[in-house]
Image (cartoon, rainbow, N blue to C red; front, side):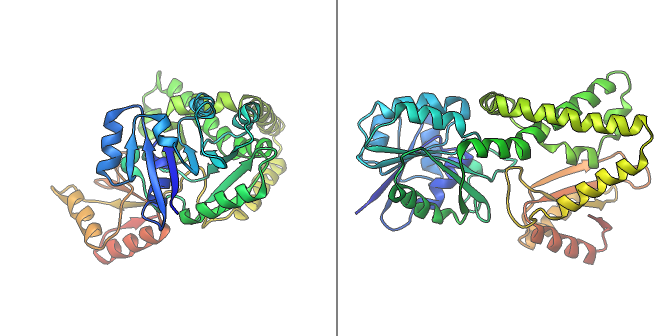
Length: 364
């Protein structure tokens, strides 16, 4: 008996899910997009078994439906799906990074023959689109499920079993609690990064040295400020109440530092750093999260033609994959500084060892 999976929005997340499921015994994966070109791309890349412009055709006899569209479009798609003739016992899930609003929408639309289970794979990439899809995206990540009220344990178990193909760790969480936690560990940091970059941008308007010297560490700690503006508009508006509460708490934290500096309270500053250091040291290092990890190396490079190509070719010959590459020219004591990023710590360590064996000065 074939299990049919319909995926709406076959981009990075939807495409990666499709790749995890496709080719498994008894599974058929159908992709949907309102754009013909998107169908061509997902079929050319072999991400799905078939693709269609028709929502009704995509969901016909589907056992599972994955909504991988932007957060701002989830309710619209859910309303359209619930109006279609769906297979009895069909399980609908999504991959949005906010869960309370879509859970409430699903509860209003509720049908006795269809089960909605909210989902959030807590993994990502600095790349986007189906071209970046990978079977490894969810490996060693948490995959949160937030079943709506009344969803039978049997339906939840079916989705949980299917998600084993992603090699993620499935965690069951209340949708409201999910939004509070994710708001603190992802939504708030994105706002802080954007605000910090914009503050420095305003300073730079009167002194260009801010941009010149803001290399290295500043770029690293504000990397998430480069996230897609439209996606983050929808996420923040969807989780508005939680984010407003978090920002008020953040203002209190910043107010505490203002007071400590005004009072020259060195002991309080030390205590704050000690508390942060202690908690951060307890955070898991080997598991993927919502903010994708990058592992970076910096290499002193001479000003010779072809030197960058030589280095990247050497790494390619060693089957070491690069995530990103940047040439930094803000240091005066060396001819140039090459910034290499890797998705895996093991790749970074192998690259470091190989480049050092070739005589390059490598810094972590």
